[in-house]
Length: 80
Image (tube, rainbow, N blue to C red; front, top):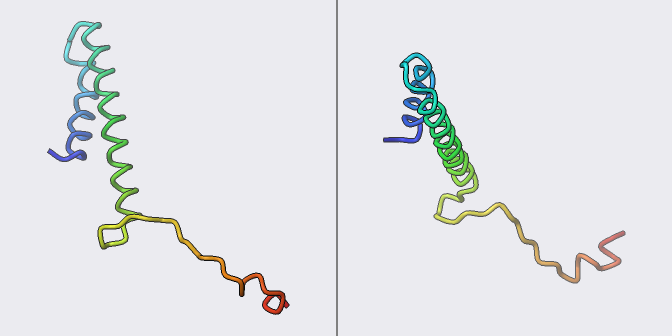
């Protein structure tokens, strides 16, 4: 079951729980539990999108660039 399917199913459950006639305490626990599941699944989805965004395509991930400083960068002739 995919994460998107979990969000869909729990969204439907969250919508129909008030109309099922379950006791108040069970309703509160179920709504709290569904909220926790939404937070965890939402975090996993966002993390997956972020990791896919920074993937270089060759199995490496990175967003930082590195430039080695050399003497020519600080040479007074190069600054003029």
